[in-house]
Amino acid sequence: MHVPLLIIGGGLSGLAAAIRFARFIPDVLLLEQHSRVGGLNSYYYRNNRLFETGLHAITNYAPPKEKNAPLNRLLRQLKIKRQELKLHQQNQSEIRFLDQESLLFSNDFSLFDSEIAEKFPASHNGFRHLIELIDTYDPFRPLPFISAKKVIQKHLQNALLTDMLLCPLMYYGSSIENDMDLGQFVIMFRAIFQEGMFRPGGTIKDLLDLLLNHYSGHGGKIRTRAGVSKILHTDKKIHGVLLESGEEITCDYLLSTIGSEETYTLLGIPSGLKSMPRLGFVETIFEIQAGTPLPLAHDRTIIFYNSDKAFSYQQPEQLVDFNSGVICMPQNFENLPQASFKEVRTTHLARYEEWELLKNNQDDYKAAKETTALTSLPVAEKILGNFAQNIVYRDTFTPLTIERFTAKKKGAIYGNPIKIKDGDIGYDNLFLAGTDQGFLGIVGSMLSGVSIINQHILPRL
Image (tube, rainbow, N blue to C red; front, side, top):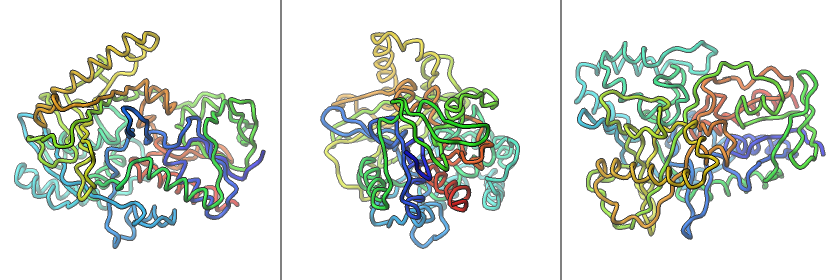
């Protein structure tokens, strides 16, 4: 079998790339090793209902009139109408450093600006200068690593405020310990603080089904349970792939969205990339009765918290670090239809190597998941108010869960700390898209796939 374009990975980046290409040339094949698409943003069924993975909120919200905003550019590229998504903006979110300070933010940037002016008046002028830098900075220039933390601290002259700005951006997109590349910081600051967060009216399954319908409507093809065992190449020329089933598929161009080192593994050669720690996470979903009040959180959508004296974003020595994390209430978006349940989702940094030691002992692994959930619960209750008595179901997934279902190395959802911004890894007809290109979040990941199609593949056909 031969196709002009073959895409490895049915996550959102691969789906977007496939739709974009199929609009012009229908003969494209998308390969997904799992039984369903979505990658990190997918779903599963437990307790007689659907649970989402990955989707807390989508960043990069923009009203329709902002034609050049990432969200609107993406929809135009895919020919998807905004009405099909039924967008719901966040209510209000918060950065809460316990016993120190808190900052509110929403999709109205003036709220965040006023919060900083009120609570950090001595740093507000520096914050305005930082905004000027962010507004003019090109994050996709091929520059060496620049410490965002040093740049922020230079502007703000306040260590607490520096950490409070970094906390949400790191948890929603940093693959580097205790810092971010300045370009990544600019991308995430714009996405979370200046543009804001939203979610579609339905579930992640509804979003994936919408994308699949658009893709099939253009004539594109997809295969699930189609793991790739090898990328076939001669020197720098790709011929196709060998599937785990033994089938060979040839192609003119190959797009890989599974990660840089994961792609090099299929090529059968070392990546040559510097080895750096990969950050993993655990997440627990608490399903609670619909009428359960959360008196300390009001209508908060997401709370990014830190309870330690200093904020630390690094691989913990133990299984899980509960000193900081993310608490999300996915039902707290504006005008979202009332559900028959509520969720509280807690996310914390985790150490893959410690979880890996439990891999071959299911009893110990289950016990560690149980301990994680029961330790996370009082942390969340301290911030939200008591809800334990109203929990009807809970589930926890770990870096091993992520690795198993997405094949991400060490279950690191943000991939390799070293990003390949142009998607070019030195092959004539093989390109990289997705997290390891450096586009972050759902909108960013999808734009990553679209950008590679537009820049490297469509112009050559």
